[in-house]
Length: 117
Length: 114
Image (cartoon, rainbow over all chains, first blue to last red; front, side, top):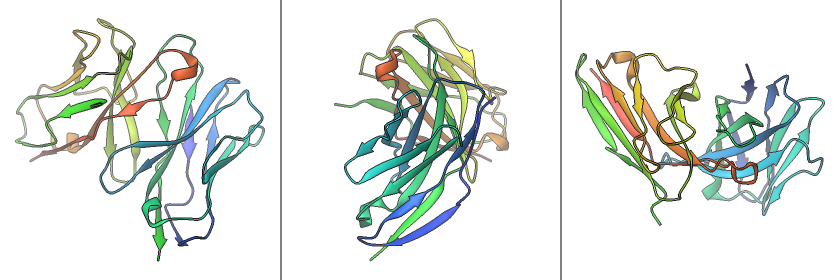
């Protein structure tokens, strides 16, 4: 079974600054996918970024980027130029490759990020 | 562009009552999922369905049943609700292709069992 660990229950960052959220995972799979989801106070789960394990290049989406270290089983999220709208819970999630099957997600417990004006 | 729609948004039940949470998606996705979110626990998979007529257990299936009658809809049923089932329930859907294995979530149902 896979496990996902987010060691930072809460973090805060000044507006316009950069913050990094940590995530580690444990798996015996070689091919898999990693995700960061954002959950603002509205409770809606929103995809932030997706990383394919077989790609060495780190994924980026505008102000969001990841540092994917496959050997260390680490997948951190960097938010640049933090904005008030980034205030949310952030969840790291893992799913193994399953061809044309379903992709069940295993989530970490989340990191609550507060952006301070 | 509705995406994934869950009903109801809120529900209060008494212990022993039954209810069905409804989920529908309009993105022509093959796979659908039910998760529960408890404080400090992240989201945990209850059941999932790869296609119409097929369902499989996830991490925490006890006390729940599901039904996938067609491609669009995936319902979650609590036959005899217990206080331990107080939670926020999320439905999600995704394609089954590798390139499109992103899950899209509904807005959630907050359920309280007294």
